[in-house]
Length: 338
Image (tube, rainbow, N blue to C red; front, side):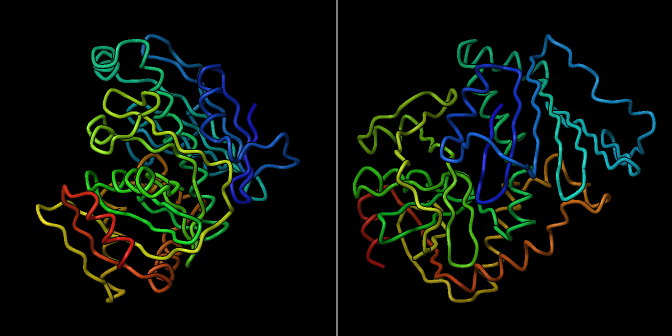
């Protein structure tokens, strides 16, 4: 059993698989606590592969069918879904307490493909990261939005204790490469990778281990750590010294180009649209995945609140449009001296 306290959101996680539990403990090491008197969220995970069958979640005969594999029991406040490789049952209790039961079952073609690409010894690493992202992050992120008005950005953040930068953008916009560059060349620390938790002018570190490709590691002359999947490896990034929050200096909206350029973005409406589009396009918000119809139960209705929080964020920070090129050292100096 694992107890986690993430900025006031109290979570209890029960896992049936020992290797997965070790992975989750490592992943959430900064937020682990010995015990919690009460919890906002209980998560139960039953991990199994394609060749195993799960125990029955519940008797679904009295559920209302909403769409395909989404079913709702309005009377007992239960929400069931089956989406590609994941199925889950959410039960809502008093005082915002939520109980989630998740089951992972890879589709046959995916299972065979992962065996072919990664072989058996690395399949666990892929599935464990997939489980953390889809089965633990999502309900926690919704509660952070609902209870604390914390926004989630698809972004990476670094700090040197006096300056804190955020890099956001779509895939392959060199967000993690820039963060790794600051780590290797300027001794910055990576506060968040992939997910940034922000509110107004503050960034709240989130412990996702940064992942880089072999090409990036070679380019920066840095040593990658453990394999994350068949493409990327984890990067060593000591985080035991973290503060609860950091003042944001600048936010860079990134892309890749043949020639680098940097332009200040002063139109807040344009900034808002760009940030909103990045999250929408990458589908990093939980509701795009498994929990899209929770509004039917009047649970986790964060859409309007998210927009208001994002508007405050855009008005509280300085934004720049950054085009990266292969001259990484030049990019670094441009960002630091803007």
